[in-house]
Image (tube, rainbow, N blue to C red; front, side):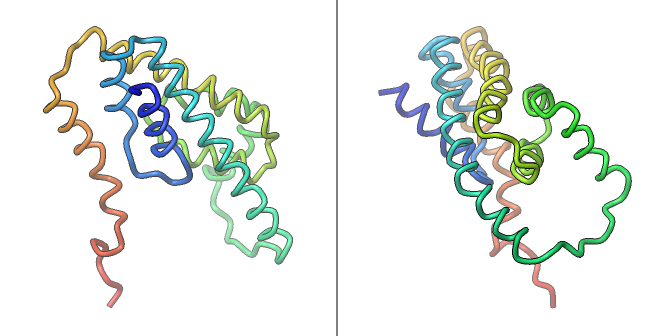
Length: 173
């Protein structure tokens, strides 16, 4: 039952623009399931979320692009560099993004807008997730964190997402 719960949480914390942090859950379940079971179950949930995202967003992006040409302003040299880097080594960019503290959604957006193939995208997401989740699950095994500390970590990691709630944003007036 714990593996099913971890799979579901990994799915929910990685689908679309999810606001739930997955790190505390992987640490928690690493201590209960073991490093490799927690890693593989969390990775499976993440890959399932990536499949759903790809199936939903790629057709939406294609329809939006077909409707009208973009009149966006020039984003500048730094922003233009990311798509060029992604075009050179898309698999490596996606896979290595798991080793950075950066959020995943910009890399996801690059994959979707460039038409990166579904199969390769899913394998890259798995390659991105396995080392990250293994490290987090290992941390849960090696350092037995008390429940209150996991809850506090969850709350701290949730703070950036809470700022996005519409009723907490300042009004434009």
